[in-house]
Image 1 (tube, rainbow over the protein chains, first blue to last red):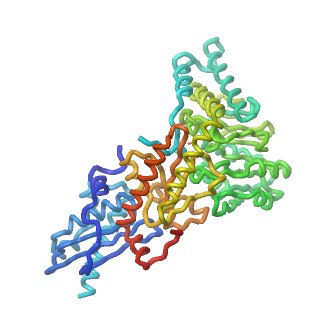
Image 2 (cartoon, rainbow over the protein chains, first blue to last red):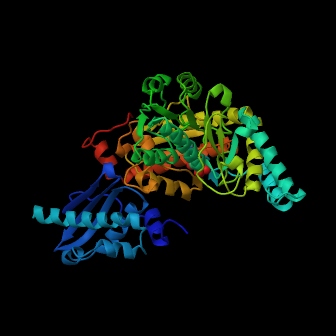
Length: 123
Length: 396
Ligand SMILES: Cc1ncc(COP(=O)(O)O)c(C=O)c1O
């Protein structure tokens, strides 16, 4: 059995929405280098809808896959829905993560919430 | 596939497989049975014992067959501790970067009241004989120091340490799991009292190993039962694996110089190639290291994703990142040589052998360079370093 599901490997090998957004409306960064993973989310927001999202991640395969999946799940969504994204939903969308990797999906949820918070703070 | 993870395990050699299969087909009796067919298996073990003893310049009756490196380490350490405790000696000297088979055994002894002193291994991953000399006390019952480190490949001054221990009459054990079959081992010249070997690191089978114990090194059983191995290690012998181990070690020792010459040239090429990647560093002394070991840290990336992408390019390697160690901390070996967590997460171990080619090395160098650059380009940490928000830790 492989370490990760096909879905995880697909998002790891072909991450969606990698990169950054200049003059993003909200930016969130969580994690730290000491623990081995950092996630950064950039949001473009129009009329309280996420019109574009990009991510940068320093971390393991599941961290990269979780960030990629999370960006797909919030793109085009209104902020009230975006704020309801849970780490569980990210992990499920990836067809599951190994138990000791669940924190990667938590980071994805936290990074998005931090980016939305940043948007509200700036407003 | 390019296999560059020989420190994890090796492919069985032809001679070892042939010896093993022959044994399974023709010599499958129980060595403890008294009839001729059983005695044939006993003879096979005796001959294997002699062969292995000859490879390390020991006496055959100092060779004990075990289930591998972990068991040998456990038994050597626990045996010495038991003898020590009887004499009220409960101080054990080791190093901070031993294999867990040693470290966890020492931890258990610590909980039982032993005092464990782990020597600093310095940034180059090599201890000095003087450190051992200064650490030895009246109540020291064991010095256990690995011959070559399994992650960074650094070779310790075992003969010099052995001479000190001999002079001070302190038992000395070395975990030679990574050394056996790759560098010369002569237990007389090394002055060791006990030494651990594992067959699968030199093209033998998994789950079999040797504990060399000099005559005066009193063994305590880890496994109780029948009278095998002079009553020191119970259980019907794994005859095919033992015979294959002897064939593999004999083969490795006969070809040691030729293999080393080849592997060393490949290693140097590999190190030179990876050194060109900016903000990278070779872990462990460049000279005092196993011929096939290369271990690097690359700043700004994480090791597991590096391994997965190398796997996609059919390259098998390993890393000391937390995500690959299954714990929250990166490799204790890299931390012991002073790498900070952040850098240790970005480590890569490539362990090559005589079956690798120049072409393999060239492919590895370009694959690693490409993957490191790719991962750095998506790393917010790397970006912060590039634009000066965070400091680089390694040199450009
Ligand atoms: C230095 C060292 N000691 C001990 C061991 C354990 O050997 P085994 O896997 O045969 O139990 C290993 C292998 O991983 C090793 O590299």
